[in-house]
Length: 215
Image 1 (cartoon, rainbow, N blue to C red):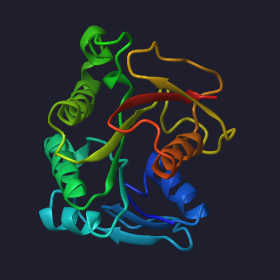
Image 2 (cartoon, rainbow, N blue to C red; image 1 turned 90 degrees about the horizontal axis):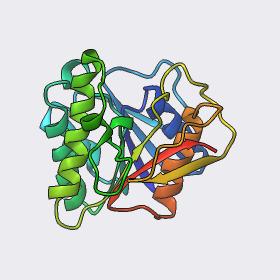
Image 3 (spheres, rainbow, N blue to C red; image 1 turned 180 degrees about the vertical axis):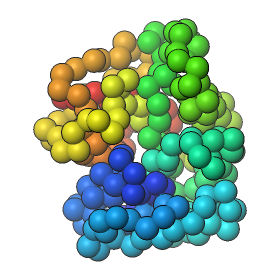
Image 4 (spheres, rainbow, N blue to C red; image 1 turned 90 degrees about the vertical axis):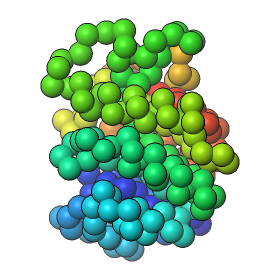
């Protein structure tokens, strides 16, 4: 049993990860700006702004794994990469796994090639969020703190709040540099959560980005 902390644990992806980890018997703490609308029995809920350095320290303290399931929106939009960079530093110091739920456009479609964000036109209204997630993976690949145990999971383009919450129980993983798989049905939050918790329990893709689609 591990102590797993989920940042953004009341959001679309985060709540599914909280639910999955809790169902497997892990000790789960959810951090969010506001209270959970439907708390899950057995989960510890904490509230606070991750712009506060003290909140970041508290969020990482005692965790075997910290999952970043936040979006670079609202108060985090301008400082998202720096907040995640500090979480990475704290996780390395605490010997915690740092797991990031990333963005589709952070992937590469060929080994060593440009990221999707660099090679395709994207709507301007999406650009700040895309750039923030690319900054996070760039920092991890180039300057991850010494000893940091990390991975970055990139969902498919179609993944989001309009997708089903429950899933099939299967998923397909794609290494960075392979063409993304666009499968039907669309990936559910539950199947993304299974992939995250599977990787925490049985490491297979540490120190890099990998993609996921419906199995």
